[in-house]
Image (cartoon, rainbow, N blue to C red; front, side, top):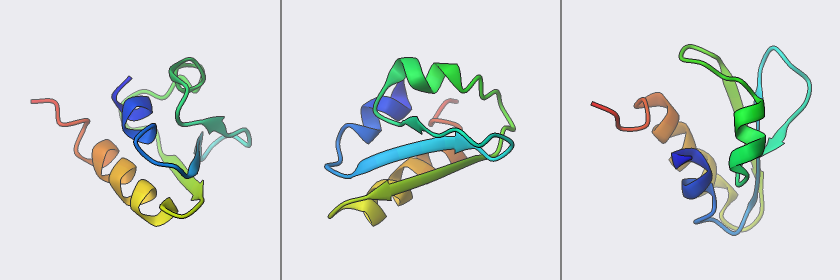
Length: 71
């Protein structure tokens, strides 16, 4: 849910996929992200197209790499 909420803050079209699969999903859709079935340790690829694409990828990658800021 945090990933989709963060993605929605950007105008760019953002997709995410498991590196072991070919299909990408819309990073702004909670349901599509859930269908990835990505558990801890799953390698993901985040791509974006649009004016703020670079910022979007950096922010989402940071969110994922920090474990969604869970403590």
